Length: 358
Image (tube, rainbow, N blue to C red; front, side):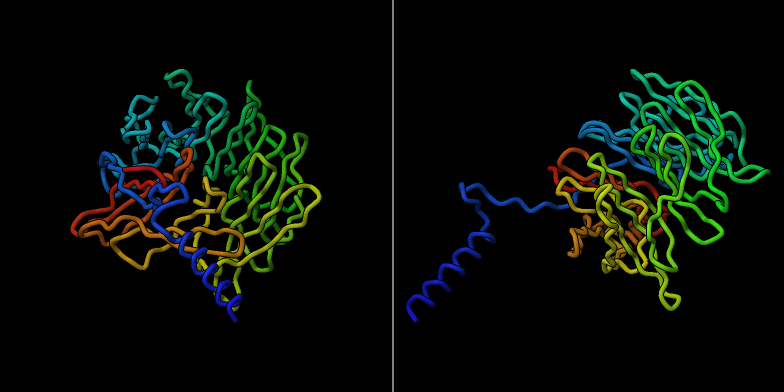
């Protein structure tokens, strides 16, 4: 009995040490909280398209605002201390919108719909330039870029178009028979790009191997679609999407760790969350914004294997809808960018950060 009592006491002491406000060295424990980052206002209502970060001191957020002349492009830069608006890029004062932002080597590449015509904005050594597309498309669905390659996917009056830039010029790439539409594209290298497509047989994942686009053979769940594909330098691939069961949508995640492993599918308790903004956080878990049950606070999900937990952003006075639209890792922190609607006004920009002091 004495030995059992001693074991219980040791277990209680061990648990107390894990939850104690001081660490083993006597330093206070740190509880990470989301903090507000002020953003200069745009012309509401605003739409956030993308957010990308290269380091704690550099991130870019894109989108568009509603002006008297229609949609106008919107670009914001994070310098590690504050958000500021950048209006120095070509076409900043012309109708249009900004799409996905990518870091390509030391450069920043952004898709720009400039009054209906597509182009790529490039920022090198602090100076902006443009790479025009070889043709104007009816719709521009997605864009991705890596060193030595870039893709723009969309449609014109002849159907699907996959435009590929090899560093010197553009060519049109063919897709497998039966592909009707490319819903998104992402790349890890010039010879390793992935896309999700609507085909004659349903949603299919395609892969570019440097020679041709082919069916990647991903065993997607039945009655499902794909929202995003997250490619990581380690070779890991994570797919997020929705699966429909009896007409009800539920989020699924698929992970593949490399050539010799099988795809692993999980169904975290995320309801019908759209997973486009999913990122790998500095803690190794997957993070994504979810629909909040509190009108005055944002909400985020953390998915670590089969365990899902949630956290809320800061309370915002008189807010009736707070929507993080994009996440990015900035060193040891997470950066969020989206919109907040305050009672009596239209949605405007908001930003939050987790893992760093306000």
